[in-house]
Image 1 (spheres, helix red, strand yellow):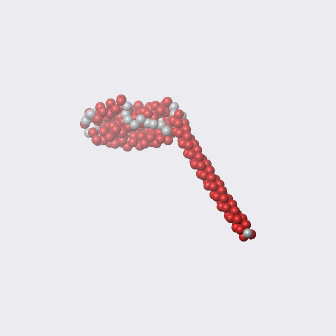
Image 2 (cartoon, rainbow, N blue to C red):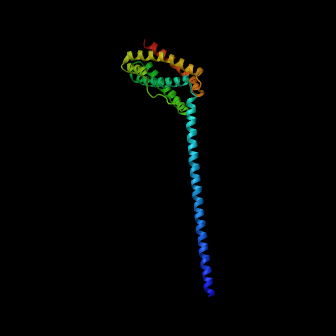
Image 3 (cartoon, helix red, strand yellow):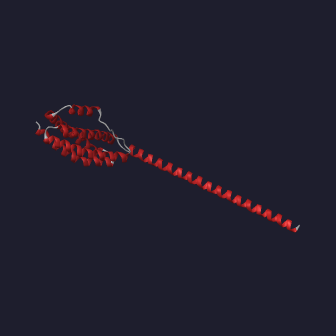
Length: 208
């Protein structure tokens, strides 16, 4: 009889231990699940905050550009593209060696300037035009149709008139622009444009 009672108590104790172990395991699992959920929520919040901050920064930089800055950036992008395209034509279509050399210089220097402008636009979050406007496309098409000496005269005429205009626009941005990096780009590019004008005038005299 006594042995039976002891056996019953032992069995009850064993059940109680197993129940406590199960409860502890459940509580531990619940705690891990809570921590995991909390970490995921925190991660999502951090990611969302970073994305929002990034968008705000880009929008803020673009919003800080004045009408003068935007006008200049657009004109510089289209003008630089036209200089490269026309320079490529001169390198292949010109009959005069001086004109060919002028075209090669235009391709090299304006490609570099275009890359610098694109780098600025990427940092500022600004979208530059990637093709010529109707006026510049017409100039390019008309030049492309010319050959030999006629091409040489037309190309050098364009380079003289366009660079006079470019110099004025770049100087205006350097003095009147509001975005510091864009103003710096404009100012440091002016000497290159002035050199282009000088070489264009020499080439124009050579093909009169």
